[in-house]
Amino acid sequence: MLEELPRFYEPILEMRAIVQAEGEQFDRLGAELADQFRQRFVSTATWGLGDWESELGIVPPAGQPVEQRRSVIRSKTRGFGKFSGRLLQSVAGAYDNGNLDIAFDAPSSTFTIRFASTLGLPPNLDDLKTALEAVMPSHLGVAYSYRYLSVQETQAMTIQQLQAHPLTDFAPFAG
Image 1 (cartoon, rainbow, N blue to C red):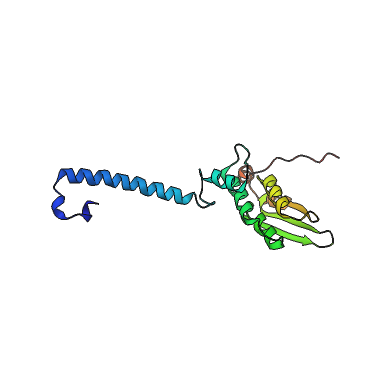
Image 2: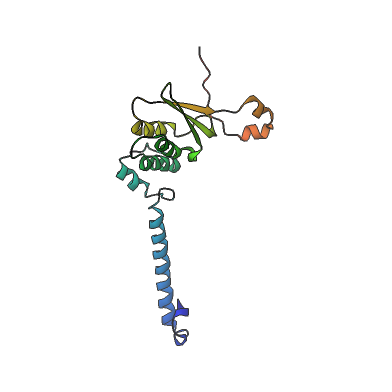
C-alpha cells in the first residue's frame, strides 16, 4: 500500500506502521469476503452447508461427509418442477458425480439407475432413494443396478492393485 502514497511518506516510520496495520486488516477482510463468497455455492460451501440444509428442510445424519451433504443439497435444488426423465436425470445426477445411466422400461413403468463409475454400493444410496421418492410419481418404480469387478478384470490386476482397490463389504447370498 505504501507504493500508492506519495514518495515523501516512505521515510516516515509512523506512516509505515499505519500502512502495515491497514494492509493486514485489508488482507483479513479480503480473506473473509472470499470465504463468504464460497459459502454461497454448494460445490464450495463448508460451514455454510447448514444454511443450505436449513433453507431446504434437510436434516443431515450426524457425521455425514461434506460431499454427501452437498449431493443431497444439489438434488433438492434440482428436484422442482413437473416430473420427466430429464428431471430424474438431473436429481440422480447430483449423486455419484453424475456418472449414472438411466433407462426406462415402459411395460413395467420402471426406471433403472446404473452406477457407471462406482464399484459396489454408493456411499449415499439412501439419500438418493429419498430424493427420488420426493420427485417421482407413485405409479413409477425404480430399480438400481450396481457395478462389481468381473473375474476377467480381477485376473488382469496385480496383487498390489487388488489390495489397493476400494472394495465394499459383501453379504453372501443365503438361500
